[in-house]
Length: 230
Image 1 (cartoon, rainbow, N blue to C red):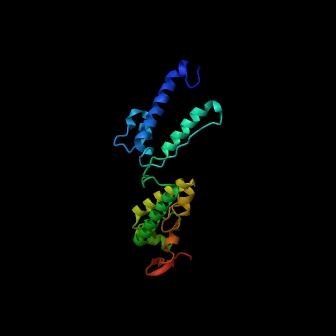
Image 2 (tube, rainbow, N blue to C red):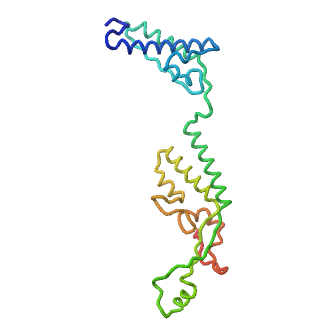
């Protein structure tokens, strides 16, 4: 084996590597000359690196050298190549966002969804007839159950913003994953249940956080029989 050359079974691999590096050098030189034609297609390496070579991404070039006199020539060539790379100008696309900008966008999306939910959601009360297996025969409750077909109960729920709540749930999961947090725990904290609790309905989750300040409570025949504790 001679200095600067590879012989034997590794020769073909070395040839391909050197051809790729040569193509990279030609691309850098063309960019520095502001040529109208950049030979990206001369190598798979330069085709893969094209977004970072005068493209729309942020690029870092790491140049490795050594203090050994034996490799002084290669070190100087590497440093000169690195210097030529510094003249290449990229225009980073605004689509390449960092974690901070993604978090800010998610927060704005969640705030807009929460505002829409507060405007659209409303109480809805319905009467449900169910069978009461514990009612005692001969009582007034038993007579009413026979007359009405069962026990009549008023069931309240929150409706009106189902799509917005589904979108908000998805945004909470995406934000938790971005921060490396437990999505199920964040959903529970926001009143969406999951493995950590029940869904945010009229009688569960964190619906009270959204409605405590404006709720008129649960009414039966015009009389408030239940309300959130503030």
